[in-house]
Image (cartoon, rainbow, N blue to C red; front, side, top):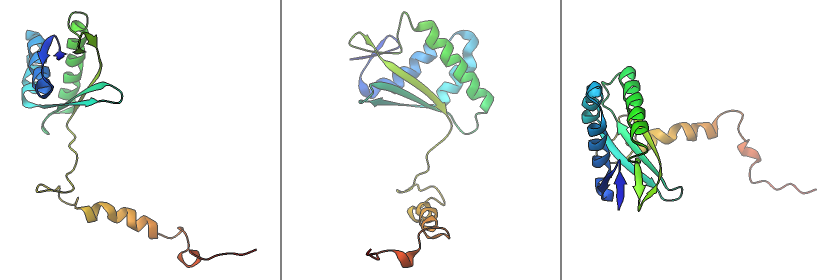
Length: 149
């Protein structure tokens, strides 16, 4: 069983638990933070190799860099305030390594129904193919020839 900021959570509930607990732990002065957090999408990733837990807070595109910085500062304040009583992530009583990433960057979708314009698979690989054929690269007339001494 996972404990996220002192609250029990199943694996599939971790993002929502993190989001709700961060909102609960924010003070009244941090109301702008909770409003931005409510508009954001929180996802969770567990790296089984390094045993690191990652929380991604994806904010909408209309959020300014200053608002993102405010969210970072308040997130850090909340986690510092609660670290002794309620670790961010705890598994079977053991504190875990974690990181929080706040961003508005979205990865382009290369395949699927909602492809990002200009990011079809052919468009992605064209620069790579062109680079292989540019001047200064290996002379194609010298390839596959054997030299005997």
